[in-house]
Image 1 (cartoon, rainbow, N blue to C red):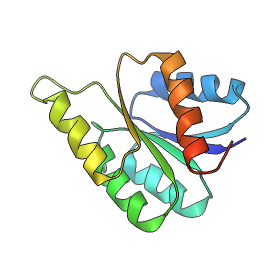
Image 2: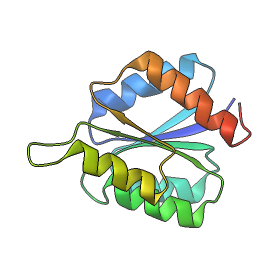
Image 3: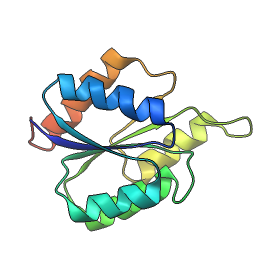
Image 4: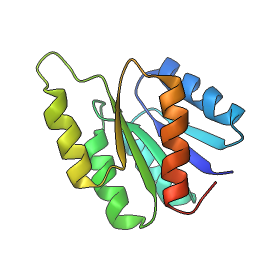
Length: 127
């Protein structure tokens, strides 16, 4: 199974995703923002990072950009709920252009998250 990092500024979302993917047999670490997540990603060998976009201390787009440059072969799933002044279509397209493998919107469909996680890991030769 894979080692996965979940980066989200909402504690309950981090823990729900961690529990879900741990139950699937993965090792799942969590980080509360992009700064902590990037530090963790530089210190451990993750096969997949799941990151929120809208968060403090390095948003998810920065995380995607930096990880795609520094960790070739890492899978990236972006999750977002957008915001009152944010166009989800623009965020989704930007995340994909920067290297995200998939973009999922909140409220998360956990079955879809399982499927996408499996798909991305398989694409990169993990599982």
